[in-house]
Length: 141
Image 1: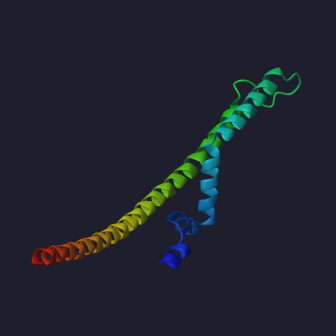
Image 2 (image 1 turned 60 degrees about the vertical axis):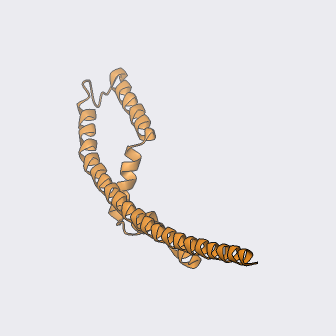
Image 3 (image 1 turned 45 degrees about the vertical axis):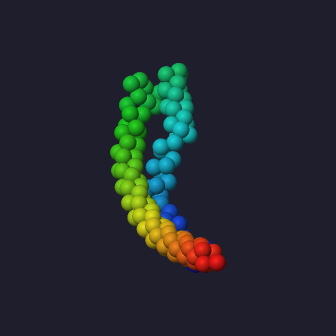
């Protein structure tokens, strides 16, 4: 039984093996875009973009009201939303898979506990029978 447990994989490993390359990329992008690092870097880049376009003496590639910057954000949002939704759908699949695996584990544990309870009950009955037998022997003397 220990060999079976040592060779078996976790639910996360089993689920991860079934992901396609596109799904892995989408999950990675969603993870990156949902991080503080991404927000901080994007904020720094936007501030630099705005400063360069406000204080530039010769060439304003995107003058106020920063139409090009707005277009970049719209494009980013147009791609980010479906990627994040794909990742969320896979998270739902992972949660469902984990719940199924947890249920199987709980059923196995329940069966094992029931077997242990039966074994303890048998041991208690055997010990009680021995005790009663000893008491009867002592009364007979």
